[in-house]
Length: 250
Image (cartoon, rainbow, N blue to C red; front, side, top):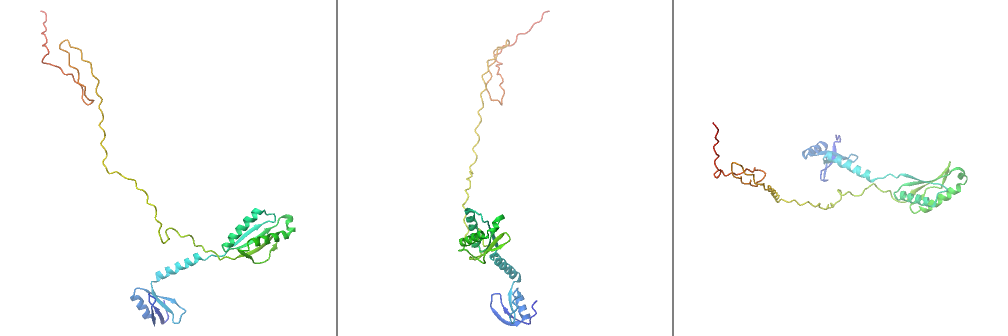
């Protein structure tokens, strides 16, 4: 709640409305369906603005997250050496140190002594001097080598600006959407299916003529028909002779 009796009012479009009593400014904000937000409390008189307070808080949080994402704290990296390090390992350590320095980090170069190597500290100083000379285009030594216990170290500051955490633009966030290749659609046939071919009905084998009956002529051979119908012999009842009467003895 604004307790100042008079405020300087700015409308939602940024236009100056002048100094007016706080109740009048609040009434104007309510008429426009907005909130009266104090944006410059240390000014004389304080500056207020007509805006949506929820949207204002959302935009403020979004800007803070964006600023936090872009900032990067300088970290401290360490590169460890030994007096008997080989040429290949030494070159690898130099390349790693250059990567750290290009990222804007500080590095600590440490030479560890083992056993009787501690009696020859000049080996560590010469090794550190050689290391600093290899990375002098990317970093600068902050102080001379310092021997502490069984280790000699030196710190170097980067000559590059720290890199931010801005990642590569995602395909969805790019201004121009990348067109995806169209997938081929398999062709479908709308023609009706062809009718099934009729099955061939095998012909029944010819049957041998039936033997002649003693009471009548031989029957005609049966016709070859399909499996659905049965073959029945055809008889000629008109030409068949009448049976003889049977007599019994007295």
